Image 1 (cartoon, rainbow, N blue to C red):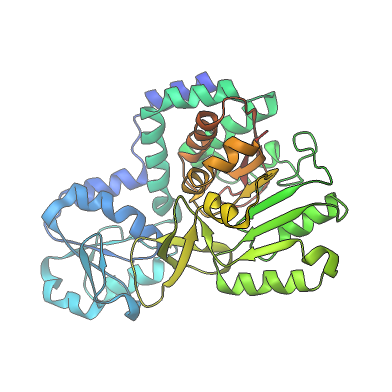
Image 2 (image 1 turned 90 degrees about the vertical axis):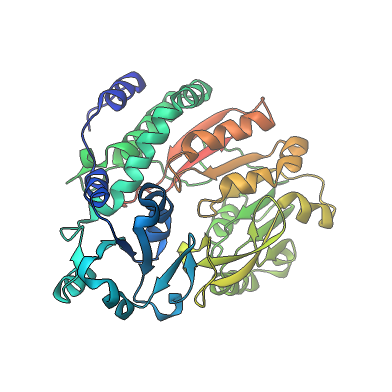
Length: 385
């Protein structure tokens, strides 16, 4: 890809008047009197509040093929069994909010429903996020410029621009097998040009998964460290995490504490959806959601009487800002090194560095990207030291 500057990206953003696929669909919806949003997965729940605000009372209901969601309410709208839609059939317009939705669209179309986005493509589903990113970046460009000025090396500048570019204009990356190869870095969470580890580390692993980060950490410190606190929300992952720790020598495992909860700004019970590597905090309770516990890191460490933390890693599926708020005391007191994922939400790329900067002005910031070819562009990390 041809290199671009932040000013060039800004000029393109503010001069761009091309409608995204999502905006074109929204214009089609605007002409409809009675609308149903079909699909209450992650994308459907993400886009529903926007569509409800735009359509008002013309948005009648939502629907999903999943029986466990029937009768539940999403953004105040009841989720109907698809068969219940027949009472509206003659004048109902359906917007399908599902990734890989061709089979669903064809099924509804064959049953005689008026499907608004019957030519749905993957980029149309994803374009809501791109549209949202452009809107956020126009409204918060001064924050973007502030973070750019805080970054400590030229590689961080390059990755930062690349991340913004990908969030806003993913069509520029179509046909490129490894779109992030130009800014790729290995050694996720422990890049040697940024992170210096000692034999006195106290690591907080937020989103410990099955212990992959811990394994990498142990190899880098050659098993010499003070303590590890590992937090994992998903039950299956938590069992596998503890299974891995059980294989370690007792002298190592006794210095690792595991918690079956997520990190948040306060203690709270919430509903989560998804599983394994894709657990998300959900806005709705349904039969397929799990009720899990979230805790503030400050509260957990206060109970353990741990006064010092040297390194915090967070990959908590879009909850990073809340988790940082819940760790303000330990950050302010210990000034730990941090590795925080900034790819789950388009605004994370600037809001997370600014939040850390507000907590402690002495931090230096670096941005690295650790994935090559995932279409969703995962694994962008902000390092604060």
